[in-house]
Image (cartoon, rainbow, N blue to C red; front, side, top):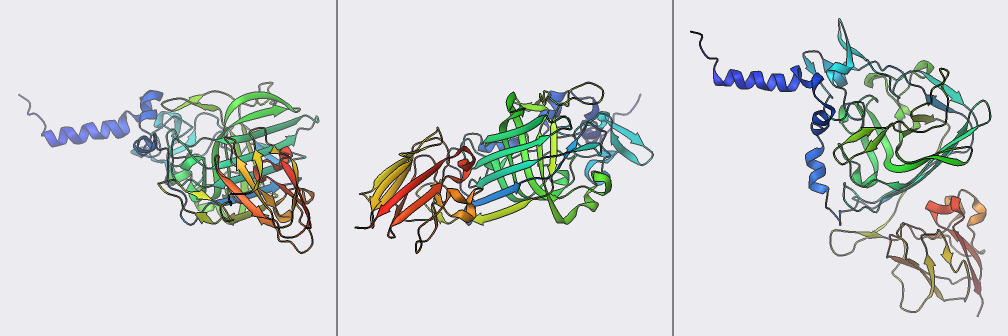
Length: 431
């Protein structure tokens, strides 16, 4: 009669089978449930008044006015053993395959261990270079954590052309405040490590420092016509993660002295329990006649600007921000709308009077009369002897006031929506 193995040994064997032996054969749903961020996200799912970023919100602007972009093509990815482990101890496999993890049965094993992703993905070395690229990216990081509601905001417009003169674009103005399998930090995060060993995003990208990153719902365009709606979009200004010939490097080869902006319109949608595979309609035809199922585009010729706004603390967990004093009781009122208008667009007041801007929309706006912060400096001007001003972030339901003490013409705009011609004028007459 055989002896029964000790109970502790059985427990250890069950743990090993659960961790290693069965990971490659589990269903997508089972792997999705193993995403290590699920518990943290559950704790924040109903958070309607999250704390704000310590020290005040950060506004980031990244622009590429002309030049080229590098467009990734489907390719196999060599796997960094530091990130993905070895056959007897695989790492980074929990979560939806490719979106957040790589289970062992999707890896090709060599004598040295796992070395290549069996399936083609956006994260390889194959690419093409396309011309006439432009990037306008503005993000405001206010909310510190994942939450049901967030004050973070983003405005993205990215365009490029192919050799036949077709234009392509990805746009996004809506952040996703709560992550699915890993944190989204309210939709925008600044000054954080992402990807690779961090388990914040796909491990197929190298571990890198992100100066700013966002997650949102966007739209894809071809020849100025929308061709796909509600696309899962991620953009990030990071350390340089490419080597010679634009090869995607391992962690030890990341270049911290150079930056790039990476834009991904991912072949996934967001389900209730995890990521769901769904190719993006890009309208771009590959050499084999099929359609490119994603956009993974890298901009390198960048102009970057960042600033930290001044916090004004309010009661409760939430925090609002402004760079000016709160409005006095008597003031001329301008409304900021969801239609991206100042109403009225032009007003006339006398020297010493105050204008109050009320944000009645569901969007975050600014009132900015500073040419240095404008894409088009003609959208912002003040008379000689007057100081420029910037409201900072004005959340929905909040207001901003400014007292005009120098006569003349003031032109101002809303930073997130300057590209949509959200510009206003104040004429100040001498008494």
